[in-house]
Length: 119
Image (tube, rainbow, N blue to C red; front, top):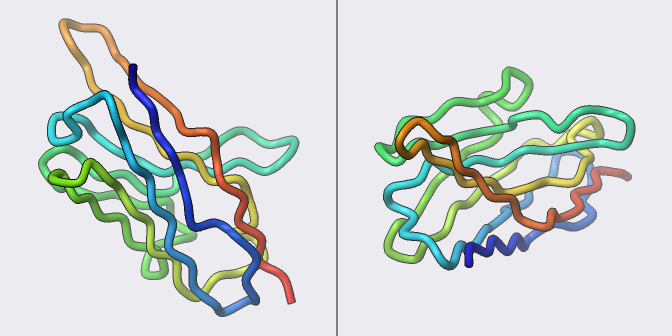
């Protein structure tokens, strides 16, 4: 059974930093793409950052230069370092892993961790 457990959320002042971590179990992470999404009430969940199993990354425009996604395949983890945080970064952040097998796309979600940016 695949399980993703996020940690590292919390309350921080604007301009501060947080590091989110997601521990995956039940999968061999090296063959999965991994990503972080976020969602605010009333809005669709949006992709924040993604890292492929080959290590290629992409970021949502508003977080480029501030957020960094990384993965540790030995530990089955993916992290999101968030710097220069802004109030508009406030959201529930979700870890996601996904891969395509035989034409079918499989993906799993964590339970989410709240990130609040406020003075």
